[in-house]
Amino acid sequence: MRRRRAQKFSKQFTKQLKKQLNMMGTMADECLACKKPFDRKSKEHAETWKVVVRKKIQETHLYCPTCWEEAMKMIKEVEDQDDNGIREDE
Ligand SMILES: [Zn+2]
Image (cartoon, rainbow, N blue to C red; front, side):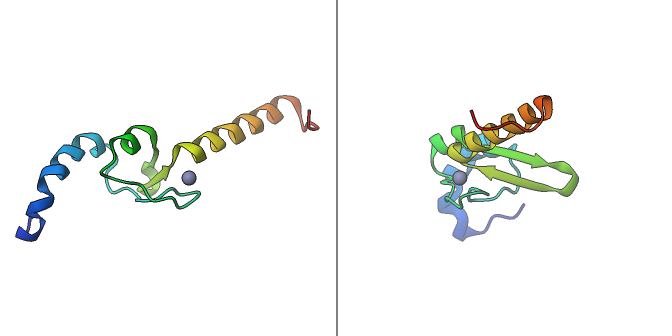
């Protein structure tokens, strides 16, 4: 990978972030659902945001904690419905 001089100033934190982001590859920089920007400099974001890698289509999906929670809830509801058929609201 070539590093141009103009990128030198960012080298320091890039190096540091690589450790946290190396599994993410070429990832999106915003939440896929709500378009909230992902702050690559934020350690909190690196730890709390969820990344879903779809190897088949070489794509990385990024979700903020809020949307991830929503997604999990929806998945759970769908699973419940699969078990019990369509339910009415409780
Ligand atoms: Zn979101």
